[in-house]
Image 1: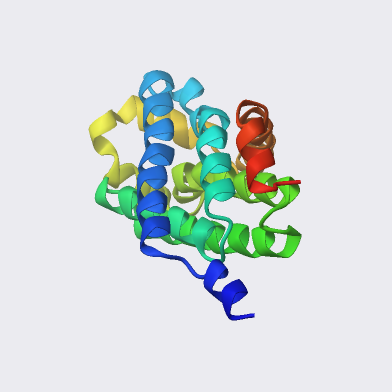
Image 2 (image 1 turned 45 degrees about the vertical axis):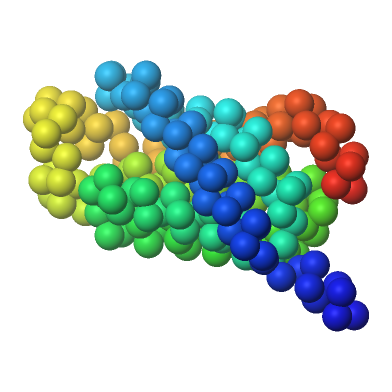
Length: 199
């Protein structure tokens, strides 16, 4: 019993792993946004698409540290990066909320279950899209002011394109891309999954 509890508890090596993997998760999004962000139309799809390469990183993290809190802590580190990079408070809170929802799903569906891992990553990817655009829907003026450095025409186009309905569609696309990324991760990490006992 004590050994089982100890195995479930996050250790220092787990925290280091979470930190490193969270940096890689953020890097996946950063690189995709850098490429697709030059145009406001393609930028809309950047968070969703970033969920595909990030799926490999997330699957590796969750298979190496299938413990309570792993997913939420990784999402929290990503949220901190968003805060450092100047995202609005609502965006950061949204990422934390998605991290909590993903953690609950991950635990409920099984931390050594691929389904649990994939669904958690789908929520994470959806969180990336919400971080990018929820303020466009709810706080247009604050969004326009915070990101004025991108230029008036760019911001105006984003505001024009992002509506509650289009945001819902982007969230569905993000969840789909997240699941694709998880499956790619499963294929690439097949031997590691078998060793970790992931079903």
